[in-house]
Structure formats: structure tokens, C-alpha cells
Length: 221
Image 1 (cartoon, rainbow, N blue to C red):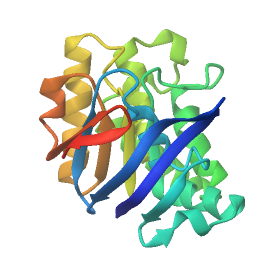
Image 2: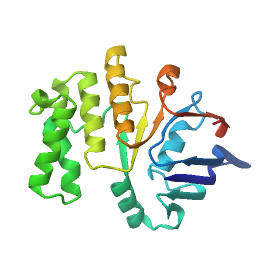
Image 3: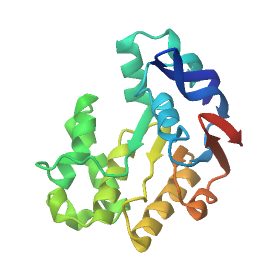
């Protein structure tokens, strides 16, 4: 599903370059659950941004579901991201002036999903994630854990092939974090490919693999 070969990212400096990713070689199969760990500045978020097609300024080879990303122009790259990838962020990134159900509906509108199917998908996920009673509330009326549940639902409502989670439990207290990890494990059991960045060793070990970065290099896999 994901194959990176000799991927590097750097910034120009006077007299040289500063590397944030170095010679990254990483293969993730369909349906795998992988945790990415490392100290601050190790390149974790940079790697996730490359995998998620949020960053086009890198060198090397990256194939996503068999498509060579580096060969794509901007619009096909955006279409590949839209069709294949879902994102969960640490700080939710919900739209404050939209109700819960509207936050879930919006990504489907962008994909021209018919209204009846949109309503069915929204209803299914509200029920599955136990937030039916919150559907008409705004994000600022929810707890942090409830907002993250909505964020996860929004990420998966488009049925992506890959789910990327950047510190999905980092802003939550322990019981809320546990609920999010249980949900990620359930999605993985359903066959979703998941890559999570985390500082939590215990949550990292719930994945099938842990990839550890140090100074932009893969230290262990």
C-alpha cells in the first residue's frame, strides 16, 4: 500500500542543507497498523506529511497503492489524496460553525456523494461511534474526547484506504484516549491501513509494528 525508497527532505542553509528526513525506506502493507515514534525533531510529522501527500517538497520515490507520487502533477496528487487518505489530527480541526452532522457531511459533499447516501453514511457513523445524541451540537459544546470521536468519524466517512493519525490521543485524558485507541483498533480489525504518530509507548505497542525515527533516519523498524 505504501512504499518509500530513499525519500529525503531538507532545507537550504548557508553552506549546506538541513535534513529532516534521510534515506527513508519504508514499506507498509494493506491492512497493517504501524506506529511511528521518536524524540521531538526526529522527523515523525514530516514523514506523516509526506505519506499523506501534504508535502510535495521531498526527493526520492513514493508509491501509494501502486501510483508513483513523485510523477504526479498537483491536481492528480490532490485527487489521489482525496480518494485514498483520511487524517486525524491532535487538535481535531473541526469547523466550529458547523454542527457535528454537518462536519461529517462536508467531506462527502466535496466528493459529490448523493444526498441520500451522505445521510446514510453520516447516520451509520453517528451510531457506530455513539454520538447520535451529539449530532446537532457544535464542536465547542463537546468535550475533547467527543470532538476527537467526531474527527475520527470525519476521517473515515469517505472510506479511505489509509488512515493517518498525528498524536490522536495527545490532547486527551486517559479515558478519552483509551476510547480513541479502542476505535483505531476496531478500524484496523475491519481491514483499514493505519499509521499513527505517538509519544505514548503503550499505545504504540498496540500496533503491529513500531518504526522509530532519530534525527530524520529510521533507527529501528
